[in-house]
Image 1 (cartoon, one colour):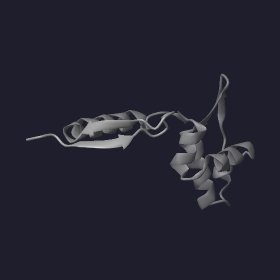
Image 2 (cartoon, helix red, strand yellow):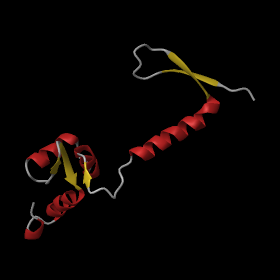
Image 3 (cartoon, one colour):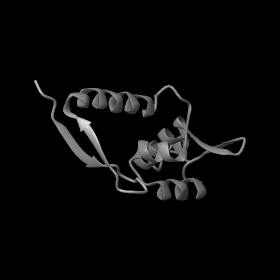
Image 4 (spheres, helix red, strand yellow):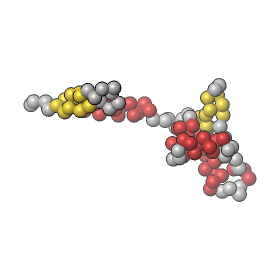
Length: 107
């Protein structure tokens, strides 16, 4: 069986240079992308998250996340020069949204 080729251009290349991908190579490319996505997933056993990861976990934008932290609505910690959000602080924030009258969940 003769291999078919697909011509495409690289995204973000300085020059639009076409590249050739053989159809027989596609399963390997898909496998490589799947493996990369697995490495990029946030594991649930971490105690602290980056601001971007915390925003993603809440389903909000990064700017909104920074505003909530800077306003004191969501607590965060500084580790060295890095700002991190403990997972439990996200839980406390959501609990406070569900029951704002409860004194034990006040932020």
